[in-house]
Amino acid sequence: MSAMKKLPDAEFDIMKVIWAHDEPLTTSVIMQEIGNQRNWKPQTVNTLSLRLVERGFIRTEKKNGKELYYYPLISKESYLKFETGDFIERFHSNSFLSLVATLYEGNKLQDSDLDQLEQWLKEKRD
Image 1 (cartoon, rainbow, N blue to C red):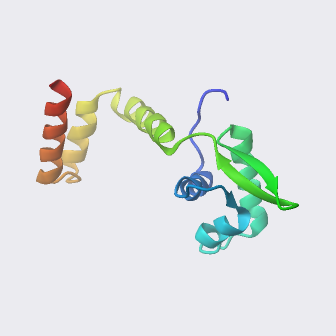
Image 2 (image 1 turned 90 degrees about the vertical axis):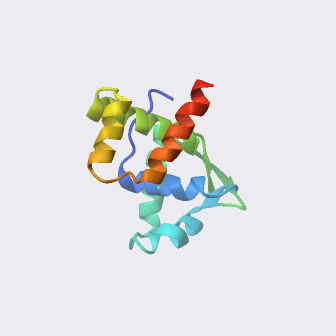
Image 3 (image 1 turned 30 degrees about the vertical axis):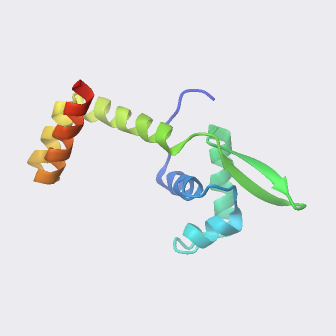
């Protein structure tokens, strides 16, 4: 796979469904979990899944005749590391302090979050 790229929201939503399961999924399972609430047709799920195959995020395998099963090739953790790194680079010039300050000033952090961050930093230094 070439360099990882940001997924469009609809494809990311499908990946979240795939990542949430330990076993490979079919189009019908994806439809039950997200497609129906989004008013997607099965063809929409198939099209989005094909794009994920082309991007190297999933692979497909036919089982039981013609039903396609989707397998993740990129872990949720790998993708979240990529997205987080990209976000910090683009919006905070690779400054973790800038990110935390923005969250704090925007009232997105509570004292308990700061306590957890402080504990995490202490553990990393030890």
